[in-house]
Image (tube, helix red, strand yellow):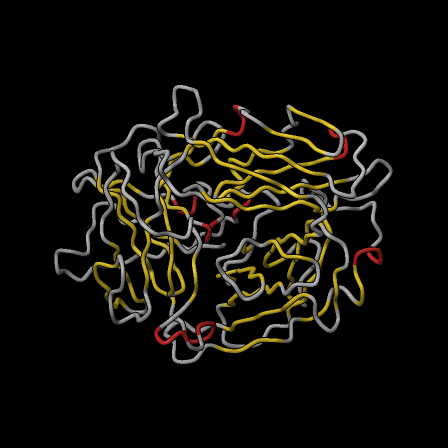
Length: 429
């Protein structure tokens, strides 16, 4: 996503004094720390880019061939722009599948206008909501695999100025996966980590050379910054393979996500301490969070979010945008900068979501412009490889309920693309 973000070191909204807000509009795109598989805005006018499968906003962007996949976004104008979408088939590593002809995977036409749009109504910040679904009357996708949709303004140079990218995966379930999660990892972190093990049955697919033909991905809470990619199985037999007791599949368990909900911009909801109006925006201040030293169970959605308002009606066009103020109350933590993350920003430490530290108040704080609804979030730091870690901010506890996704791609010898043939989700208990 593309964020408007502001940090207010040394200021607080709890002293009853009207504050002056300086809005810093980030002109840097997310290219500093983004991989090609991320759904993201590439333009300061475009916000809340979402991919929703079968009308369920809480599901991963993975769907069976023929299922409904909807891309939507908001443009911070109240007038129509002729946006064009371009669909692209990708390999397992999200590079373009250039060896396959477009006619092999697409029925109909590519590079079509997005004709479903509606202006916001009764909102302080005006925007136009756009949506396009696949399949549609012009475009039908007929091969499994990874897909990237790029959207351009019609008048722009399509090679240089896309306004957003959206990624999803289409599945042909030809291989079956059996997976489990272990909390006893038999290493020195067995109270703070979780280990994944899984087996794969090839079904009717003929696999001659596992190392060349299979590509695998294991994701924790849909994050790509700490994904385990192309790990070879340690057990192979006729028609099957197993990944058992692999140290590479041990993940820090983290902690349950924090959450907040804003259904009405005039009323503080769950997790919201107060809501104020400072022209021209609403500002929602969340309750301060302190770093955890013990595990405490709480229901969450593993970082997912839902756009909604009171009565759950006209969510796309009548939901308000607010500056949401995040606070982590702590002495200055070892490990470097602190970031707020969730699936709404792809879960990695994004420079636009870095918090500033107020020495006098002893608090990390920062703000993001978000569309009202229900959100999960965490505070993380970045390790030496840029992965989000919670060692000092949230802790790591083996009891944490996490979602793990396993993706299996197959490119038979002589084939020209990576078909997504295996998919499984599993949650720790």
